[in-house]
Amino acid sequence: MPEGDRKAVALRRPTDAGSRGPLSAAATWSRLLIAVTAVVAGAHLIGLPALSAPAVVILAGAGLLAGLPHGGVDHLMAMRLAGRSLVPVVVVYAGLAGVAWFVLRWGGPAALVAVIALSALHFGLGELEFTSELTGWRPSALPAAALVVAGSGAVLLPLARSGEEFNRVATAVSPGLARLIAAEPVRTATLLVWLTAAVIAVTVALMTKHVSAAVDVVLIGLLGMMAPPLVAFAVWFGGWHAVRHCARMLTLEPGCAALLREGRTRAAWRRLAGLAAPMSGAALLMVLALGVFTAVAPDPAVILAEVLRLLLALTVPHMAIVWWLDRQRERVG
Image (tube, rainbow, N blue to C red; front, top):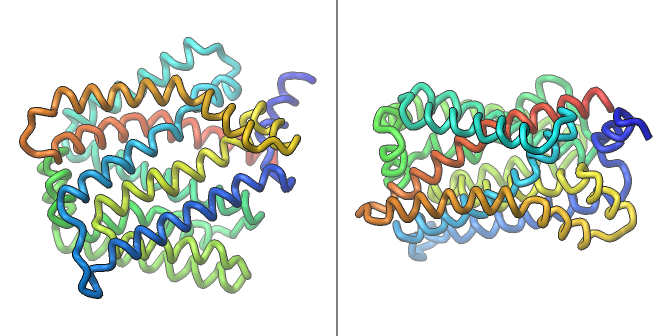
């Protein structure tokens, strides 16, 4: 089969039950995790103890670390898209991440705001793509835009709610940014933007009988409103976004997709884990190195801030590859 045809086959949207099975499983488990987290985090509303500050930092760190492997096959997908070998792809990927980290470290609040905005867009587009692949629903422009904004609620709602632990981490990342997001007009505007988008998305989803899409928006809202802001984002990142992205990659990576067509789902997951292990291990080592270098800091928020900055830097090439992949798939159809 010619290379162009092989690429087209690899990029087609999943249509068979074997391919959609992992997407359905990812949707179920991510919804369950977010629902449980929202209930546990909101238990203080009925008089139970609220999560302590150390528990918030530990849960947030665990969620961020759990999300690391979801970009572990970026280099393989980029190789197929670009038709290049491993070395130049990894060099470009690492170079983009390095430049992003440098800008985030010394570029001031403007650079952070830009990357956070792009990350929110990436998360929202990821929700739209996942919903479309799982349900076959391709909404028109307005509901699609609403779904993208509503899908980024795990970023927007923590920004709108702020909070003590969140502010400590934000201050450790950038004092200027922390002051900006803590400003009441900014918080109110962020909340109103998300609520407006959520109402539109849920209304259209229910009117078109795509109940699962409406449920997802509601769950993202409950998590963002109930859980401490740091926990809300980190648990969503590691237990929702990463899980769903990995399920998508399972249907796209040619070897994994072939195993799915044969009904060998566990073998497909094992293959994906093996392919993602080298890059995931390298990212984890960088995070651990940061932890060692900052372990002497009296405030654990400093460590979490460094991990967050690294994740934001890695998100830049990851966003570029996912965007490229999705655009190519739209052309293939």
